Amino acid sequence: LIALQPCDQIKLGEFATPLNEDKRRALLDSDTTTARLAVGHLVEVDLTDQEFSALSSFVFNVGKQNFEKSTILKLLNNGLRKEAAEQFGRWISSKGVVFAGLVSRRACEKALFLGQLEPDKTGHFNASACESLGVSPEGGPLIDIVLGERQ
Image (cartoon, rainbow, N blue to C red; front, side, top):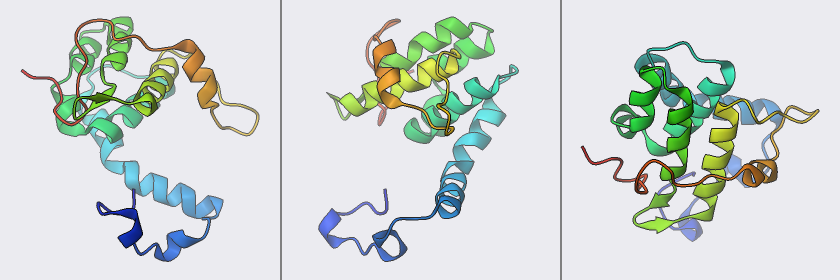
């Protein structure tokens, strides 16, 4: 996301041409810093690299405030990792609409969290592999990523 405005009004600047690997990595690192810090601050149990990565992706998408109030965090901090992983599938709607992209994203986050997702030889993940693992909305009603869980 470059700007919160219609695409035809966005001045792409440096993003008008493809970014090289170093620039992509620097941009990703910069964009995800807040999410990674939130995971490090809010999670009270030790995490594997995969769990940390999955949660960082999740927090980047739903926000620190929603994560802070989430059942995922509560379950995880109580040592209930498998139960926490089941919560990813509830976070697949935005403004009341279920999005296929969120279903796919949550499938990947859940698979990564559970250690079921391995990078290919180039170090990248294949999103289609995530989708085959599936995500189901177990453990309660769907949660809107904009509104978060109602307390």
